[in-house]
Image (cartoon, rainbow, N blue to C red; front, side):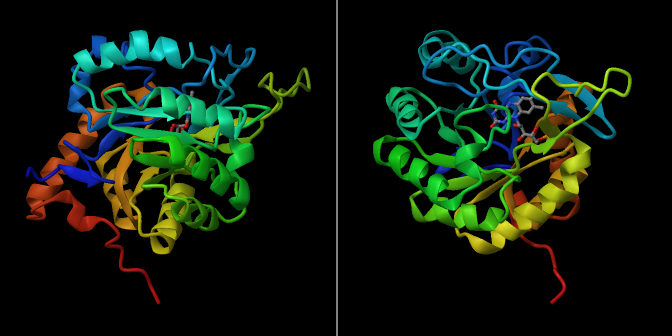
Length: 304
Ligand SMILES: Cc1cc2nc3c(=O)[nH]c(=O)nc-3n(C[C@H](O)[C@H](O)[C@H](O)COP(=O)(O)O)c2cc1C
């Protein structure tokens, strides 16, 4: 076993650095720059039952130390994914985590069922997208509805199931416990935090949807805190995301309790960020004489 290899819910990843959903597409663009199989895995852009257009522009705005987006769930639908994107990703030898979304619990279930016989590593149940009117975060901010959609998908899904949690919930650890009790194999967090900007001259919100999701270094301390809270509450593995831009951020997130990390917005600034993070973690593990990077997971010495 190499020092970076990690196991999440029975799935082995060559290292703990995953691409975050929606920031890496299906790997085609980044694949022109480097071998995408070097990443531990790729959480692909959300896939829904039918094709979706996403939200009208403007749907991206810069913020201090981060960005707002309201892309919504733009994608070509699960059948297209299975016929075109997945074969590309498998040819590239990427470990594929499919982020799925729906308007109703039945729609989530239908997407998961279509993936049952495919060659994917894991499903990431996106109950935390803040940028859609129906579904998305509506499921993720309430423990009963988060539990309900997890139960329905779990019953029909043959793949390991990771549920992606919303930081917009009043108590994220409670949602984590609710989905764990319905059979989630892992949780990932955080998705984006709802935010808003206004253009002074026009007095219009800068995003066409008025509000959007904040990501990037600005959210990092919030994400670390939430990962720590969830890690203390559940027994299933926690995958940490939110503002990770360096190997130090990744190590910090792992000390808070993350078994693996997802890198998102940082790649818009530096597409090579995940590779640099992998190298940095490898050097760190050697310097600290760790047999495996997992030794630091949850190792924060919190004050009583
Ligand atoms: C442009 C954009 C699109 C995103 N699309 C999705 C998505 O389809 N599904 C999802 O679960 N998260 C999506 N996210 C959230 C990210 O996966 C990640 O949870 C969040 O951005 C925090 O990580 P970061 O600060 O490293 O970007 C998106 C984020 C951005 C910036």
